[in-house]
Amino acid sequence: MNQPVRLALLGCGTVGAEVVRLLHEQSADLAARIGAPLEIAGIAVRRLGRDRGDLPIDPALFTTDALGLIKRDDVDVVVEVVGGIEPARGWLVEALRAGKSVVTANKALLAEDGGTLHDAAAEGGADLYYEASVAGAIPLLRPLRESLHGDRITRVTGIVNGTTNFILSAMHATGAGFVEALEEATELGYAEADPTADVEGFDAAAKAAILASLAFHTRVGADDVHREGITEVTAADVASAKAMGCTIKLLCIAARGADGQGRETVSVRVHPAMIPLSHPLAGVGDAFNAVFVEADAAGQLMFYGRGAGGSPTASAVLGDVVAVARNRLAGVRAASESAYADLPVRPMGEALTRYHISLDVADRPGVLEAVAGVFARHDVSIATVRQGPAAGGAGGAGEAILVIVTHVAPDAALAATVGELRGLDIVRSVASVLRVEGGS
Image (tube, rainbow, N blue to C red; front, side):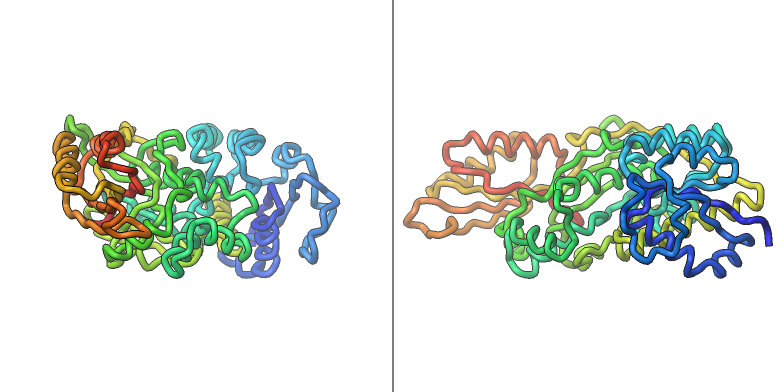
């Protein structure tokens, strides 16, 4: 057995504490897999006096000096589960430049400035692993950057935020509105006290950037991702989706393809969308995550499991720790960042998608013709039209609801169509606009 591989753990919250427990409980198995025992050299925390229950760790290992811990000569690997941009970025750059491998779950930092971390890893000849940053325990990033490295990935579509998936699943199952479903998610512990990062799509957008970077060999940042949340999704939208044989999910969609000039580009977006109940992602309920990958040779692949929580995330962290520890003992480094393609990111307006549009219109002759004319002027083809009485009343009120689903068109053309519809006298209101994915 080799000399111990010593870890500096940055953070000891929900995930960090579970990492400590698993290291303790599985110490013999981990040592056998690696060829050397794992030891915790120190744990950096914000507050030393916090009650950490029955955590199996010597209290003397705790410190508030994270940078000092990282710089110690007896530290081989740095494990970061603190989150946020700073000071985490400075800590990890320091570790990587010093040749110390890093395992991180920090999706926000990777999406904001992953390039700096990769450059520091190359400079120091160190490993940078981050499986836990996307989809918790689901083995996803390693397959993208290793197992599928000999293939050409064309599209990645995923449900990567458990909180929003729970909310939308509850709305679909019970007919509840967004506010009621969010309250239930909060009571059950699926939503944070401040759920903004989840319900407004920031969390999913960071993960989408990481997935696109790996899938398409291109540095994609959070600012490159078009982002919309689920706060505007209504019970009426969910009911309309059901009537079409669909459900609504918050999707991250990353696609590779040619733009209008024939240039190879990538498009990355996060937004709620209707998908057919026959789609593999439609049955992903509760707080689970799933990612659907399409590649030229491998075809369609699905990755599914628990995407968050202390135990699932700690499982992914330890998987990375085993990998970097084995590399260290073997005197090798994992494959470096693959960003050779350096593809431009296509603006959202050029993305090809479909719309589901619900219009509250005047119930009189010529309305449908006028509405169809707007679509024609923007070169948007209508797939289906459904008309019904306005909510709460029938024909006597002089109002009706038009539900229109389009064929595929550039998002800018669809948005311009909606914009013109809002200005028509015969359109009382545009009740809702949702994209439709997974169909033709």
